Every structure is written in structure tokens, then in C-alpha cells.
Image 1 (cartoon, rainbow, N blue to C red):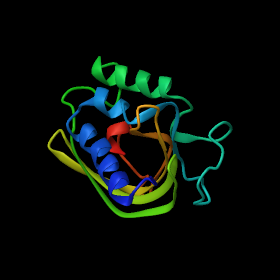
Image 2 (image 1 turned 135 degrees about the vertical axis):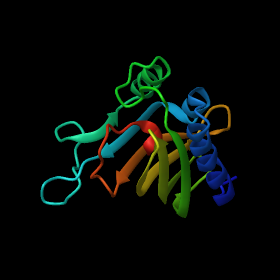
Image 3 (image 1 turned 90 degrees about the vertical axis):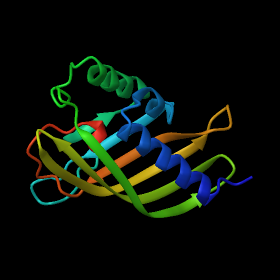
Image 4 (image 1 turned 120 degrees about the vertical axis):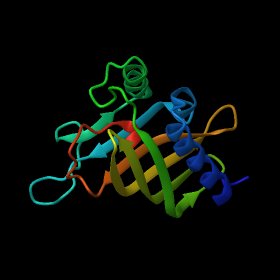
Length: 164
């Protein structure tokens, strides 16, 4: 059966909820072993970088191993963005569009916003995400590729996965 809109929506909400709950092990379960996670930069001309291999990125992991390392650094306080106290976040997803869907995969786009509270200061991050989903061997959806475009890239701190 074709991957449904409701299944996609519920899956993406589950991924965001895991970040808000700081349940990073569950968050990682949303990602395929060969998944790519990319947050491109805006260049000086106001254009997004297009090649994570040769241009600057806010974050780039070409495999889940890199994402797992990022989580390890957060959990062991080896992240400059994750020193105590940990931020409290609230992710919101809207404008979910399914560009294509089949039995095995789906291409989706959605708008997102994250509020983050740390040191008695609220920061807001927002943007668009483009996601390729696949159905894993266990029948569950997995993220194969995620490109997160941060629209308000003038930020005053180090960016980490839970901000996106």
C-alpha cells in the first residue's frame, strides 16, 4: 500500500517530539543507516549553497554515523552548543506537502518552527525541510535524506540538531 499522508505526518511529528523530549536514541531510530542530514548555508549573495562537499554548511552528515556522533556529543556534554543547561525546545510542523509517494518511498516538504529557551532567553528558528522517506525492512518509515533550510540564519549562538 502507498505511504499515506497520515503516516508521513505522524512519523514527522514523532521525530520532532523525540527532539523536544530529548529522547535522542528514539530520534535516531527515525533515520536510515545511510541517511544524509544537511542544513545548507546562505552565501553572501543570499543564495543557498548547493554542494555540501565543497561549500559551507550549517550542518552536514553524509551518513547516520555522523548523526550518531552528534548525539553522543550532546549526551556526554562534548558539544559546544549543548553545555548545561540544555535548552527546552518546541518544534512545530505545518504546510506538509507530499510531492510523491509509493509503496517504498515518499518525497515531502514542510515548514517548521522551533522555539528554544536557554539562559532565560527565547530564540526562534524557522524554515523549510525537504525529506526523502523510505520504508525500512521492518516496515517502518525512515528518513533517507533530509535537507533543512534555516530561513533566519542570523543567529547568536552555535546551532545544533535540536534547533532544527
